[in-house]
Image (cartoon, rainbow, N blue to C red; front, side):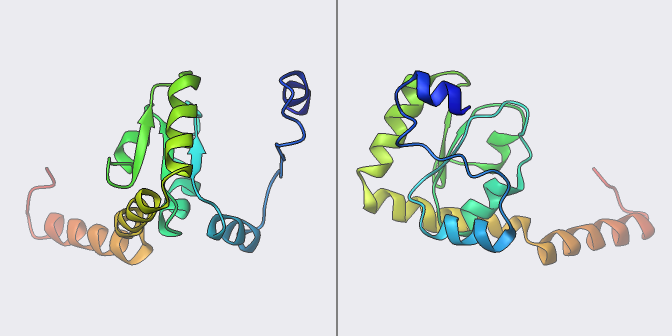
Length: 137
């Protein structure tokens, strides 16, 4: 990655941080303006919900499960490999603190559906329904 950054002439503006501890990641998200993920293989990423829970708008690849996490109120989906659209959205969001704030607030609300308590309650209701002869569909 560093070689590519050097080749593109952006190595002075890019930092590759590697694996971060949970506190380090939380600190980084708190000071971020926008979170971007364009992976087409890492599409059930916990970091997306962490970014949303931190109030950071998300720009992501419209790939596999990512559209299930992101709606237009909390983020933007971009076709994979569309670097022009990615750059445009990142620039637009960086330039609009008001829009980032609205999307960040929506992301916080959306991330609540992935909280442990919410998921545990849903699983408990499903189990009770099955035990009581209810439908799981």
